[in-house]
Image 1 (tube, rainbow, N blue to C red):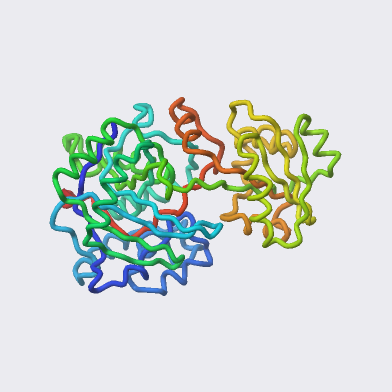
Image 2: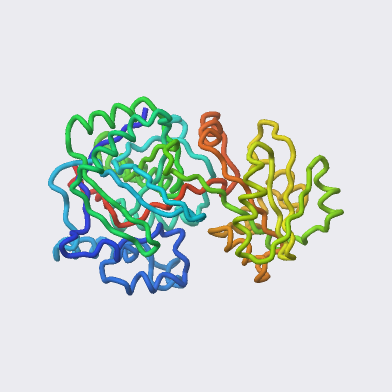
Length: 424
C-alpha cells in the first residue's frame, strides 16, 4: 500500500551551521509577531525559505527568491547534499505540557503521492483553500519539499520501533536543540537490509495524515500540474513523491493531545441555561483559585472521565464546570460539536470554519484568552486515542476541525528534498 523510498537529502552542514538556530516550527504555527525573531536569529534560518519576515507581505509574495536562496546556501556550503539515498531516523526528546519526559522515534522518506480515493494515504480533516494556494506558489517557485507532511501508522507490536531505535542508538547523528527545548537526533539509514525492512513494513499498511493536510494536498496539486506539463515524465518523476515523516501512533512517545476551543462571541449560559440545553448530562463544579491551577484540575476531574463523553466549560468566573454523560460509541469531539457548539451556542460547522471558535495552542493559552476578553467560554476536551483516529479514517470519515494534536510538532529545516532529480 504505502510506497516509500530513500532519498538524498539536502541538509545543513553542522560544521558550518548551528542546527539549533536554523530549524523552526511549521510555518502555520509561527505567530506573526515571532517571524522577525526567527529571521534575525541566523541568516540561514529555515523560515527564510517559507515565510516573509513581515506578515503583511505574505499574501503578495511569489517566493521568487527562494530557489536562488537554496542555490546560494549550497554554493557557500551551508547546505550539502548527502552522497547516498537514505531514510532519516529522527528521535525527539521533549517534555509534555504537563512536565513528563518523552522520546518519539520516526523517520523521513520520499512518499509516493496517492489520491485520497485510493485509501492509501488517509486524511482526517478538511482543508482551507487559502493556505493551499500560498503553498502552491512556494512549490512552483522552489521546486522543493521544504517542510514535511507528518503521518502515523499502526504498529502496536512496535516492530518498526525496534529497527529505528537500533539505528538511532548506533549513529552517527546530527543533534540539535531547538528554541523550545526539544532535542532532535537525526541519523541516516543507508543499510540495504534496513531500507528493505522499512519499505516492506509500510507496503502492507495505509497511513494517516497527522499534520500537514494542506502540504499533502498542495503536493498533489503540484504533481497534477507537472504531469500535464511533462506527460512523458513517468512514474518515477520527482514530483510523484513528497517529503514525509512517519511515526508509530502506538509508541509511548507519540503523544496525542486535545485541542481546546474558545467560543468567541456567543454568550455564556448560566447553570439553568446549561441544564436546559444539555439534558442527560451530569454537572460537577470545581473552584479555580488561579489560572495556573487549571491543568491540575483538568487532570483530576476531566481526565478521569475518559470513558465517558465529557468536557469542561470555563467562563473565567473562577468556577470550572465539568459535564459528562455515558459514552455511546460516538467520538467525544463530534458530540461536543453537535451537542455543545451547535446545541448550546447555535454554532454549526460553517460558523466554526468561519471563525466563531478559536483553537489556542495550549490549555493555559485557552484559559487566558477568555480572561482577556477574547472569548466568552473555553471548552476543554480529553484527547482522542489512536484507535479513534484509525477507526474514523478507516471508514472514510472526517473528524471535526482541529480534533487532534500530535505532539510535538515536526520542525522545518532538518532535511530538505529538491525536485530536480538529484535526490535519487
